Image 1 (cartoon, one colour):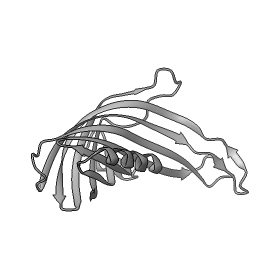
Image 2 (cartoon, rainbow, N blue to C red):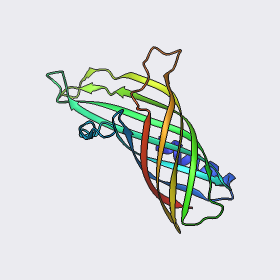
Image 3 (cartoon, one colour):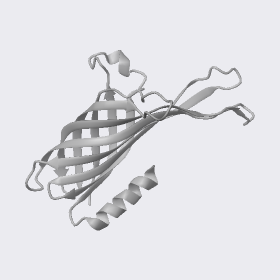
Length: 193
C-alpha cells in the first residue's frame, strides 16, 4: 500500500505545478454514541495511516490509506494469538475555501473508497500453517466531510470530520460490508512540498 501511495504522489506531483501535501494521519471511527468512552478503550476503532494531496488552485485531489493490525487470544489451543488486518482507503476530491496560502485553510471533501477486514493465516508454535487466512468483509463507500488545515511554512497540521453516507458490500461478492462507522474524525500532520 505504501508503494501505491508513493507512486501516486510522484505521478501527480509531476503533473502538478501547485503544491503537494503528504503526511501521516490518525483517524478515529466515531461510535453511534460518541460520548460512550468505554467503546474506545480497546482501540478497535483507531486507525493510523498516511495521505497525499495534490493541489490545483483551490481544488485538491488526494488519497488516504488507513490500516490496522489487531491481535487477540486465539481460540485454538496450539496458537497463542490470532491476527486480523483492517484497511480503509479512499480517493478524495477537496475544495479549499482559502484564496491564498494563509495560516488557515478550510476545506470540504467528497470521497469514494474501499474498506475491509482479513483474518490473517494462523501458524502453530512449530511454524506450521494451522488455519488459512480469509477475507471477512469488504465494502465500497462514499463520504462527505470537511476540515481545516493550519499552514506552517513547510509543514501543516489539520483536523477533519467525514460522514459515510453509503457503505455497502460489493453485490457480486459473498462478503458482508466492512464494519466501519458512519462518522470518522482525523488529525493529520505533514509536509508542504
